[in-house]
Amino acid sequence: MNRKTLVLPALAGLLAPVLAACGSSDGAGDGGDPIVVGVATHIEATKAAPAPLDPAQAYDVDAWNVLRATLQTLMRLPRSGTAPVPEAAESCGFRDTQNEQYRCTLRSGLKFSNGHALTAQDVKFSIERMQTINNTNGPVSLLDDIDKVETPSDTEVVFHLSKPDATFPQKLTTPAAAIVDSQVYPKSRLYSGFDVVGSGPYTVKTERSSNRITKAVFTKNPDYKGGEKAQNDKIEMRFFDDSDSVEKALRKGDVDLMNRGLAPDQVKGLENARNNHIALQEMPGQEIRYLAFNTKDPAVSNKAVRQAMAQIINRSDLVRNVYSYTGDPLFSMVPTGLTGHINSFFNKYGNPSVATARKTLQAANITTPVKFTLAYTTNHYGSSTVKEVRALQSQLNATKLFDVRLKGVPSWQQYRDDSLAGKYTVYNMGWFPDIPDADNYIAPFIGKQNFLGSPYRNGKIESQLIPSSRQQSDRNAAAADFKQAQDIIADDVPLLPLWQGKQYVAARDDITGVEWALNSSSGLQIWELGRGVAD
Image (cartoon, rainbow, N blue to C red):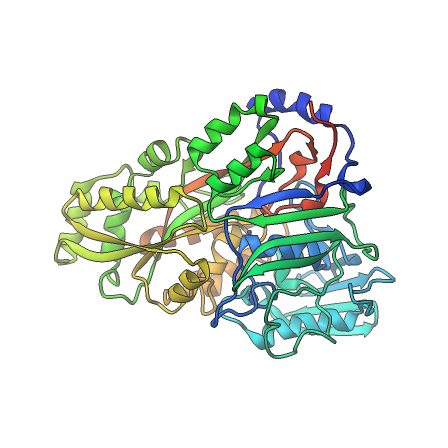
């Protein structure tokens, strides 16, 4: 899970009449049909990951979209922008100059959907539970810096951090810091299944087929006390196998809105769908796609192999031929638009060069062709992923320096489990930011509890640069640390950035609030959606 959710200038003129014509939201708010959101992926339970909607395990954009609507956090991201504002809290702030003690006062009258009171003790329980369970699939690393949580009263929470962290208020906006009922959720194990007991703007009921959610129905929570104002009474989220199926449902009117996984040809087609009462909105995005390496695997353990790949892969070709310019080439793990971004990979490797890659491999005495399998998830990031990995395979194999085979994995959860277990040599991954800060594109991938389970370590990034950057409340002052970290990653290549995506939301023209549908971490804000009057 960096950017403001704004309509790009080129589309602003087109969309303004549509948005103005929609008027106020009232359809779903007055007992009308629920607003239906189509999602081109699945949330599933597996033996290794049995609790897809438990915040101690959930760590993907789709599960987080469910949790953001149903569980409260102390802070939240605003409708647009990146500065956190109070949510379950009435107020929060650092109480020292070192960014090591953070104190929050809760709103009065908070309670969970089962009627239980929500107190400071539930906040403490939720944080300590996350740390105790320490699930390898989960987002526990976002809370690494919490040393101790105190509750001076039922409405006061004090976080003592083990080291300064100016990004801590943003981390409190994520479902990693979601508040759960201490009388319902087990203290030291996952809450298996698909139920959610929270205090957010909605309650949720799910329908399942086998171990997958097929539909999630969100109903406005009458007891909610927080900073969001729901523009609807009910949202229905339906899960599809692919984005083509969602688009067909959108065009038929069975779905009111879709946003993730749109293929380039779908974007082009939906841009011209006004006559079908559909409007497409383009927004700046901070989604990135990259290759991850198991740096202990013999095929890629020598960084010369990874550097040679960085010297060969043509990002412009990917963006042009696979994604039809719905993204931009990315030369750092930190995307453009964030403070601290530099084009480290371009600065080091320049334009693609087979001759340079050959020299790199020869200097390291690497026998060619280097053989390995590139793994990818077949549906989690959209149908274009298959074309992307095939293009990468073609680029690498055409040089005769590599012999790459492909392996597609249908189940996203299985893909995550296997990647964490080190079963893939090289694998294709995407990243939606947890928080809109450069820190979130470096810290989650480096260190003992990194998101990928990667064996790669770098003492300077872990012990010096990340801690130094987190001491800076002024994030511009942290830019120098981020730039050094990006240069180190470009040299060691434990990760290889590919492209940065734009965000698209397609909706029926009677749906209001589309311009606020995504926050600055690409999270879906379903409470902003309403139903007005179509053109």
